[in-house]
Image 1 (cartoon, each protein chain N blue to C red):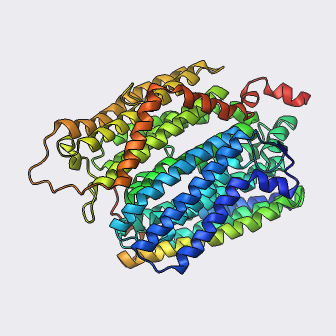
Image 2: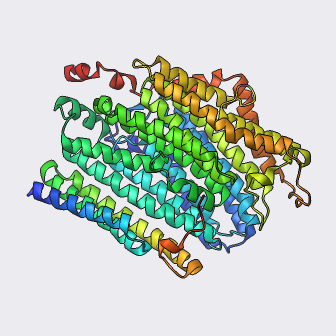
Amino acid sequence: MIAESLALSAVLFTIGTIGVLTRRNAIVIFMCVELMLNAVNLSFVALSRQYGVTGQVFVVFVMTVAAAEAAVGLAIIISIFRHRQTVNLQNINLLKG
Amino acid sequence: MRFDLSRPFDLAMAMSPDLFLFVGAMALLLWSAIGRDGAAHQRRIGVAAIAVAAATLLLVVAASTRGWSAGPGIVAVDGFRWAADLVFLVGAIIAIAMSLDYNAREAIFAAEAHVLILLATGGMMLMVASRDLMMLFLGIETMSIAVYILTGIDRRSPRAAEGALKYFLLGAFSTAFFLYGIALIYGATGATNFQVISERIVALKLEQTPMLLVGVALLLVGFGFKMAAAPFHMWAPDVYEGAPTPITAFMAASVKAAAFAAFLRVWLAALGGVYAQWHDAIWWLSAITMCVGNIVALQQRNLKRMIAYSSVGHTGFILVAVASGTTQSAAAFLFYLVAYTFAIMGAFAVIVALGSPGAPRERIDDYNGLWFVRPGMAIAMAVFMLAMLGFPVFGGMGFFAKWYVLQAALQASAPQTRLAVLLVLTTTISAGYYLYVVMAMFMKPRPEGADQLPPTNGLSRFIIAASAGIILIFGVFPDPVARWTRTGVDLVPLAPQVEPNFTQSAVAR
């Protein structure tokens, strides 16, 4: 079962990575990042069947951190929406050079 | 005193400076929420935050003189940790002092800004103290989340919001890589403790396991993003330009230093066994970073952006020390961090001091003829630029920082001659943009009708003068700092794990 879970986790992680690299909507990119984090969680849970409880403890910490990150990230996305009336990264280009 | 980290009291003692900082930051967070937002409240919280950071600094100094050490466990108690903590805390104090005036001027009345700097510093202290991937991850996230907020703390600025969004998305993306790397290393070795990982890699001969190789590669990508090493540096210029200037200074100096310190510890303490395979990767990372950072910086006309690219170049220089991987190079690394922190902080303090509301004065053209209106500021800025360049005498510590890195690279058991040559070459390229700033300040005329520069208050003048003074004084007498950095690494078990004969000694044990 461990091998299958790890493979599924790798597939999910890859889907998340491709999503981050190809999508242009900040919310969708953030969802893809969350998908990547949850793919990692799946790996941890699968591996902790073999190595004991450490992996499961790690998952709890990752979920906590992901929640904190979501709170801050959504706040930042709202703040940029107030300035630009869009969360599309193609229209957000004040900084360059 | 030797701590047994399995006992809660000993663990608390080993973490006492970090705990003190976090408790202080929490108390200040409550206080900042109770008071009414305004210039006075913002200043009160800022001064209190400086006091907490200074008290933590004293605790760290006290801890470092006690000769504490610790048995196996999740935290390291050694000179490297205390030395790095001192660099972070000094950086935090200067950053808070800078943002006191900056926030008042730009009408950023969020008093939490100062507390967030403390929380980020606490995260850095956890990172450098950690001897376990789990704690390292929590430290990095504590730091990163606080810095995401700090980047966008100026809610009225669209540039700050844009910088914060880019930083957040790329930071979260890199966190995912970092975490997947940890998961795979855990999968390959069955442990998250650095010492256990390094022992199992050697004992079970895991060097070539695909899972470990992929895990280490992903970990390297994650660290590359946090350190802004090319090709993972794309976020740095945008974020550094968009963020409020004191926060830019904090990110360029302390956040980067923390990423480096954690990287050095992970790389040498946990992955010492696979160091040989990964040497080439770090070699290329260092070489590409030095070239990209310094060459792209040449075209920049915005000073913050230019320093951002130059700090990418500095990442490459510091990676030379990591690639050498000896005790001597770890000492050179600490020395570089000290010199670099003061130079960056000082340069950004000058930018803060010369700006006024509505006129940030961040273009290099704004510095034309500065010498004729503000000779003191021009001299200080010249010192910081020359220190980053590594110019002898007038660049003070900056020269010795590069000198020690070069020396460590050439005297390592496997001499890094080509990297050393590249370091010297790219330093020569960097003269093109550092000296351009100096030239603009001293040789170009002040443009007609340039608006009056704002008066500089005592605190900014003190920060700038102190940074320039420290750079110059320790540039003439580098020995005390050099000795201090050596005591900082004497206690780190770096050398035996990087030496080629490590494999046999670990098996014998």
